[in-house]
Length: 369
Image (cartoon, rainbow, N blue to C red):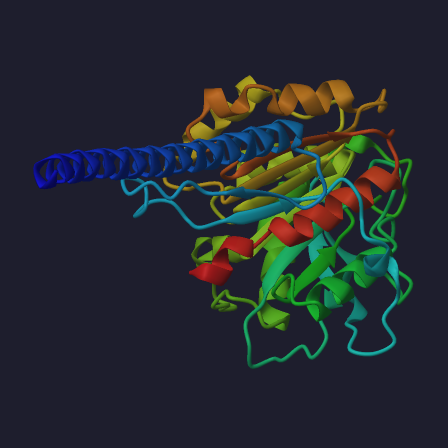
């Protein structure tokens, strides 16, 4: 009897051990499956998130408000590339079009001596307007933008002659909000002739403005305002401060920015903005050819804008920039070049937008230098 009981006890122990092992194996398998399922869920979530990110990237367009383009930071290019963050907008925020009641800049009218380059070369006196940022300080140094008008306008076309100027209002707000470093703006008359005051005078005088810009206007500004140039009345090197000058303009002024600014004056100016560049602007192939004459000078930035319904300028503006980056090493899209097309005609809604964007582009890369 004892023997039978002992045999039954051993059999029961063996059975109990087998059941315990089975339960443990089942538990381990369940835990493993749970971990596998958890890992699969995590990977699926990451994959879904990546798909969402890809979809968001596809939805972005170059004209999306506050789109940011950054200079590549590849180690190979790090020594040569300049860190340059550019924000391109297709609208001007309403707060930037609201006149400030405090901490705003001033506008003053100037008169300077120049010559009738289109005529007999006699000495003449011309007027221009100068915007000085809030708290302008003669002991500091300021960048300068030369802002040009169109074929039917004068130095007053941009409206920069009183406090209601849209250019002044935008500048005051951009500076107040800390989006840009303060800089000076000069709005001259782009006709280099004795008939400069006559908006209907021979338009060919526009093409000689480069002589006036180099010989007379820039030296006047450098001698009377706190710029980066080391002015000397006996002569000085204008190229030394080229990275602290910009040129931009609407329509005929856009043509001057391209034909005169980039193609004649790259040694003394390095930032350029063409807004609805006029039909006589050089095409990309000619710009690229003329740039070969300035092998020692770079283009810090070249910004362009035009309305898609602009029957006057869309063809010429496009011709000036299409494929330009493939024709010259001085231009690289998304690095120092923007071609922005927006809905609009040959009008100030496009030109003010162009100014707003260019004001935030010009000299921006110097902040990190």
